[in-house]
Image 1 (cartoon, rainbow, N blue to C red):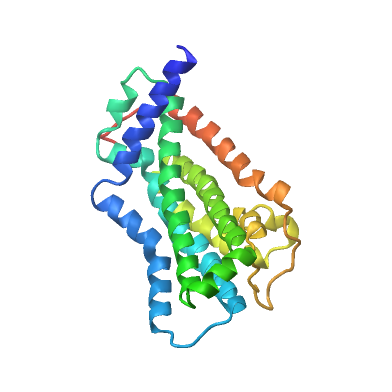
Image 2 (cartoon, rainbow, N blue to C red):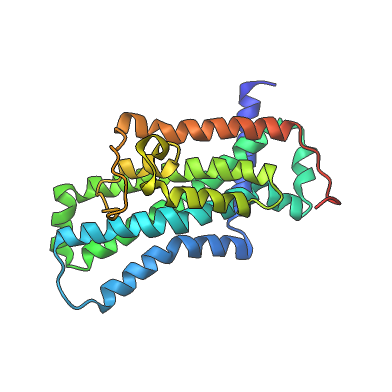
Length: 268
C-alpha cells in the first residue's frame, strides 16, 4: 500500500472522527466544558466595577489558566474526548465497521487521535485565548491594545502553545487508558491526583509529571504556597518536546494494542 493511499485513508478517518466528536450531546458537552473559563471571565468582567492594573490581570489569568483550565476543564475534557475514541465506539457497537475496513489499525488510531487533538486544542486553546482577551478588553480597548503590544500577544500565543501540548500529552495517555481499561476514569483520577501533588514533590519526581513541563512554559508564574518544594523550571528546549515525546510513546503503544485488539460486544 502506497504512502498516498495511507494518507487518504488517514484523512478519511480524521474527517469521520472529527464529525463524530461534535455530534449530539457529547459534542455539546465538550464545547460547554471548554467554554467554562470564558463564561466565568465574562461574568467577572461584567460585574467588576473597578479598573484593574495590567499586572493584576496577568496574575488573574495565570491563576485561572493553571488552576482551572489545565488541571480541571482541559484535563477532564481530554479524558472524555480521547478516552472514548475507541471505548465509545465499542460501547455503541460501531467499532467493527472501522476494523473490518481495508485500513491498517495504526492509521485508524492515528486518525482518531489527530481528530480529537484538533478538536480539543482548538476548543480549549480558543476559549483560553478568548478568556484572556475578555479580561484585557474589560479595561477598555486602548488599554487592551497597549497590553497586547507590550508583550500580551506573545503571552497569549504561549498559553495557546501550552494548551496544545497539554492536549497532545494528556490525549495520548487517555487514548491508551481507553484501550487498556474498561473504566479509564479510575486510573485517570489517580494520575490527576499525581499532577495535583506535583508541587509537593522533590525536583526529581516533579519531572515525572506532565504538569511540570507545561507550567515551565507558562509565561506568568503562579505562587504555589508555602508547602511547595521549589524546583527549577524546565527550559523551553526540553519542556516543548517532552509532551510530544510522551504522546509519541503512548501512540506507539496504542497502535500495538490496536493490532491485537478483538471486538467482543458481549464482554463488558
